[in-house]
Image (tube, rainbow, N blue to C red; front, side, top):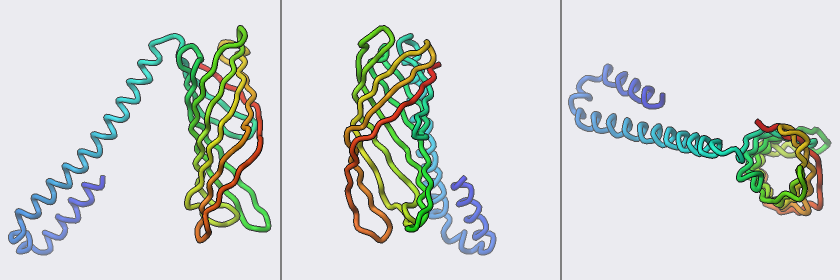
Amino acid sequence: MEFLRFLISIIKKLLKNKSLFIQNYNNIISLIFTNFINQFYIIMKKILALTTFASLLLTFNAHAENRFGVQASANGSAGVLYYIDDYKYAIGTQFQRNSDNNALGKTSTNDVSLFARAGQKIHDKTYVYGGLLYTQSFGQTNGIDINKEYSIAPYALVDYHLTDHVFINGYIFPVTYKHVNLEGAESYTTYKYPSAGIGVSYMF
């Protein structure tokens, strides 16, 4: 799309000034060709990345012990997760939207998280995990735009397989490291102790 806009703008300029086209014919052709190659390269990179990701998913799904699912937590977050190697490992991502109004201003953030954990079975339907959660926040805090805000938190989780498709869990974050940089303000770091919650997953 960007290449087409670029090409149309060039054509419009050439129609207005034919002598300019004659004088700079070689440069114009070279510029168009270079732009086309750059756009083609970007598109091919995206296609390759998507193909690689799809291939990995298909490879994992070829084994019965790897399962894909969706999850939701009581804190309002929701996302997707992938269990690997007979539930020994799990990776995934989740999203949470926060909104609040107070005397300091409006807070409206979108939190995107990535997590990974490893564990083992301790009972027929019960697994215990240790993992790490990384969260990036976007939006406003107390009416001030967020330049950069992220948090890193280790956590422990107990997963109970209620049925073959429905899993329930309880988790705890002993400590959360949080770095905040707001528009026009100094960066600061905070530590949050501890927090816990419950969640549910549906596995396909």
